[in-house]
Structures are given as structure tokens and as C-alpha cells.
Length: 114
Picture 1 (spheres, rainbow, N blue to C red):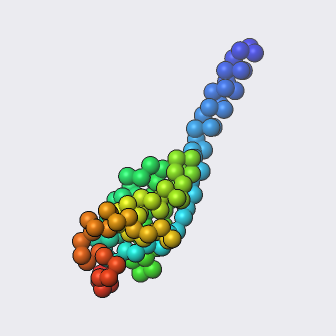
Picture 2: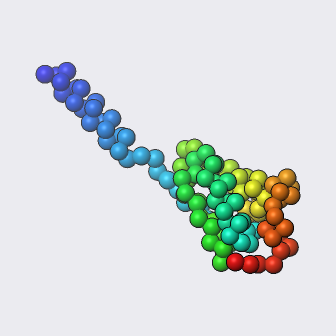
Picture 3: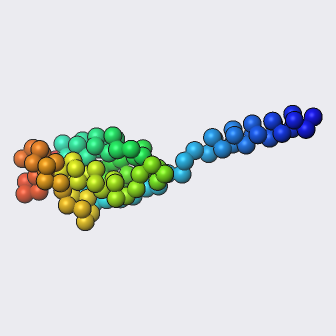
């Protein structure tokens, strides 16, 4: 009987532990994005960034909201991904290699367009 109770408690603890899932966090990062192409580029890059579960760039204020698992990534890594895509991410300047690959309309000196 003790073994049955022990097994039952172990199974319940396991089920409850898996049900809660990881605690996700949200960060807002100011970018140098200009247009819908910028939005697509940044969101695609973040979709392939380990630990990021969701991202949404608001072109009106150029702020990307990122939902991520802090056990798999951190804000510094998220900003680095945005930089590698060619865009500024708060205080992190755009990576030169990524920036050079952007279309002319997506570069910082381009006029805003939607």
C-alpha cells in the first residue's frame, strides 16, 4: 500500500510540474525599423532566436515587444539578434554586416514609409 501511495504521489508531482510550463517574460526594445519589410525581417530573425516565443514590432513607435523564456535566452541575446538583422536595438547599434544586407528603403537615412 505504501508503494502504491508513493507511486501515486510521484506521478501527481510529475504531472503538476509539467502542467505549469516555463515562466515567460516580456521586454520592449526600441529599434531603427522603418517599414513593413523591416518588421518582417526583425520578427523572422526573432522567430529563429532560441528562447523567443513571440515578437511583434509596432511601426508607429518602432518598439518590438518580445516574449521569451529567460531559462533559454536573455535580453542581451535578443538585442544581439536584432542587431545582426541590421537594426539598432536600444543602445546596441546595428551590426555592419547585417545593415549592409538591408534594402535601401530599410536603412536609417531612408524616409519613413508604410
